Length: 286
Length: 334
Image (cartoon, rainbow over all chains, first blue to last red; front, side):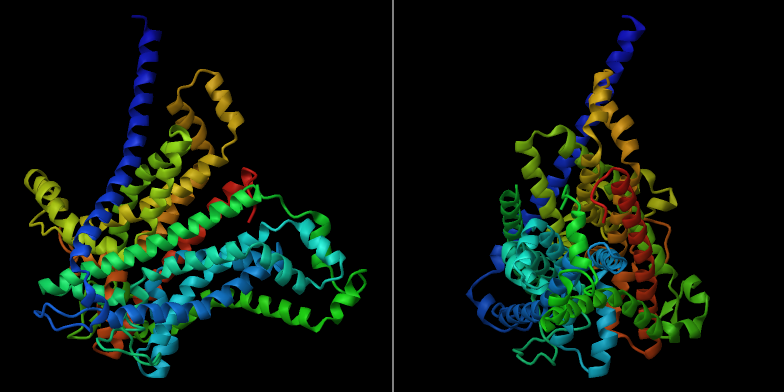
């Protein structure tokens, strides 16, 4: 065969090889996703029963017992975090999309919130320990919620900004031309137009924090009993999972898988719903 | 959103005009709610800005006792001994850097491979669900990775890969046994799986910014698909790809729960990748709520300060590279 032909064959071979490797890496990622989900579902389903949702933790070696208090603790902390983080994020996002736009302050806020979104969550835990746990003198559910809220804020800020930017300026101009003040345009026109999008931001933020354990370890700490006081240590699914999984007791480890299944389901469901809403918004936009 | 039109100049002017003098100004300035609302949004935006500063300052202040007690040797000492109240950052810092580098070495090429598959190879009916699956992989919480890594992956690795490495390459200090299943390499592998989706999705976005005209021209010259990728798209998107990898690095460095489960949590420095190690984040997770003395706590905060400083620097660099890339390619300039 001619040298030119050989070179052609070689190019074809390299092409085929590397494209195969690319496809293989995609497959590789999928394998891990399926493998993780499979183990979590199989092992988790075995641990879930009625008692898991209704009873307090039992000492190791006792087959009964559940994580009812931790489940409630997780919900409580998440709601508190939403109450703190969501308004902050939406207002900050409103500033970026409506008032700041391209001024230096808005640019700086965008940059910082993107950095904060990827910052190590455990550092946020250390920060909240310093500003809340130490002054208050006790680990508390409140400080856990503040830590989660800090993690939510960048997500909510950036999604609300992006959603508000989807509102065409002609719409704003039309409302302004009718004599409405800017704030009224924002609240009555822009917010209403992207309500679904703002909800997505909240969902994404909830998905982001409901899997978080690190920032809770030394803010909310843990509590094996019922607790409704946000100023006292509060048990959460995540921290309980960590303690149980790291323990040497088989029945605690089994229960940890149950918590793992619950957390995974919660996070993946929230993420999927958020995605659905986003693709709807995108369709509505085009 | 990608591809959104920049603001029309006239609206930008109308919305940002100083109230006095502009035709729409006076009536709007009289509205007290407007000033209040604007002020509120502005102060919350400033709050986000202050958060970063507050974290840095607070950590630094609380870390001062440790810096004062140990001086520069805090960063160089191998000692981490709560009993004698002596603390050095080296083992945790070393573990953090090495495990993240292993993760990067594995996830970098794989992530770019996934991006190539998603943007250049897969037909839409395949690339959408695979894209969603990659996002799901990113959404799986860190603690689930950790638990799965400890109970499922580590035993499998120990029986297969590590047994092989120890037997065949055990004469190298890098792979000296005995392997326990948990340790530096397992930590790196788990981190790699965790940052893979981030590297993949950012790289895919970078590839999407490459102008089709350039690709078509290369195809027109008879280039194979791989040649278009390696000689047009990768050089063109180089800055952005480096940004994507740095973004992954920033994530890996600060990842806590996954590392805590599988890294072994030992404060000894070891050349072997198979032996237990520690990262800054896992040290914090294990010791912070049970710190034995004020100096212990302060040293832990000093570690957190160090970690925050490094990740902020790396993430800023990543952000800057991606921003330059988008600017150069005419993407949304944000």
